[in-house]
Length: 596
Image 1 (tube, rainbow, N blue to C red):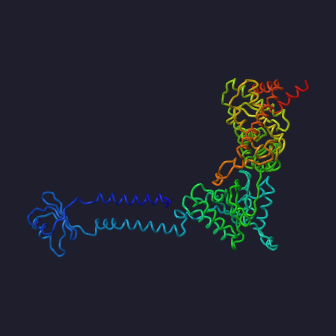
Image 2 (image 1 turned 90 degrees about the vertical axis):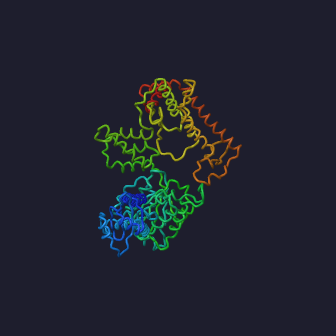
Image 3 (image 1 turned 120 degrees about the vertical axis):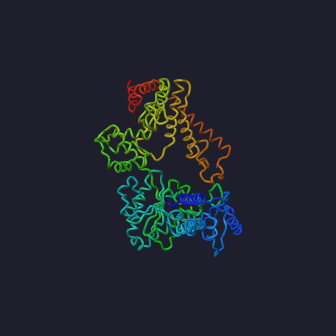
């Protein structure tokens, strides 16, 4: 058993229980202590039948079954008197049985207390178990254990180039020092989840060939006050001893949040840990060669003292990859996969806008699993298509049986989305429309852009709003009633319209002003006291503009669908027959209508 607090207490109580059971089971029959003179009177009167003599201690029994004890004077000869009265005499050595138990029962508790005290002292003097709370336990790696290099990092070339300097400094510091340069003390990797921040840190360790201490921000925080600060001190002490080296702190926002933002008292364990981290990073005082690399996707909540020059004085943004980057990333993740002759990674990359490196790794794995389920020898383009649809739209629920009436309602709804998208300039092309339930949706219309987009103008946003309202508009035109299927469409359309008014200044009545402050969720205490930037009249005007923009988009969708009602019917019938159609199906219908 490991010497944990629970096991120590369990062992202590087990030993104590055994001692108590042994003592109770061996306890003598309750007896009466009588004077020696009374004992002799009983002997001389022939009333004593049995005697056990233990040195000067006498235990006896009378003829009427009463038990007694007494003490014999040291030099008194008791045996002749007992022999004369024909008393049964038993002589027991005082050193056997009873003496051992007496010594054990009296000294065992003291020995147990001393043993527990010695164990605690040993743990406090450097043990790494029960009392090792203040010891940092980072994962230590070197060039022999880290197999990841920059060759395994793709799609983020600019971010990797900034970290190349760190590797060069660790290999040859004199190259920078002879010109008076100073390598950054800390590097903060900022990016969305799955973009490759941790992978970059591992690649640095693999390339530099130095010790690499890896720890998570949550590893510093424990239920005991002061443990986090102690672990920070111990981590940096280990790093100084192993310099040159790298300390990598993943998810540093777990301990690096703004100070003074707690909802309770001011004595916050996280703040103590952050304060100690700030002290350790400030200059290093003769500990050159120790570089701190941290990763987070919440740089907005970090304390300003942590991100200032001198601590994390270089911030490297790790963005989502573009089309070329996604192609390179897919090349890395498909090295161990047997690809079919029809697989083109560039086409897959173009069809996965917004995917991060982790998403693409998952895509390649799902495609391989699809091929394995079908007992194929290679992974084909069809498998990548199915994997992408599963990740973007959810798994098909073929087992769900929909009534024909509800299925037709869903078909009109999705046909409305698709037709408005095709007829509205600036909206992304329709890739696939399906009425097969996927995930939590009864049907889906999937749009895919031709190229990566980094900004959108007002007409594109209005076209997107009209496309979102196309499903509800189709329901009103065909059935003259609404269903709950448009709930997510209304939510997304309202959010975009609100951002157009408050974030992007796209409302003529409100003007080019930013009014979105305080609209986000409260995630730190200071935000609860932040005053809103809008007055009641401005808030009323914002609501009116948001409503107007959404209503205009709805009216636009209604107009387009009424003008192309026959096309809407053809798309719906195609969905009812095939269940899934692509954008070319809709384009062919419109082309045939135009040529006719």
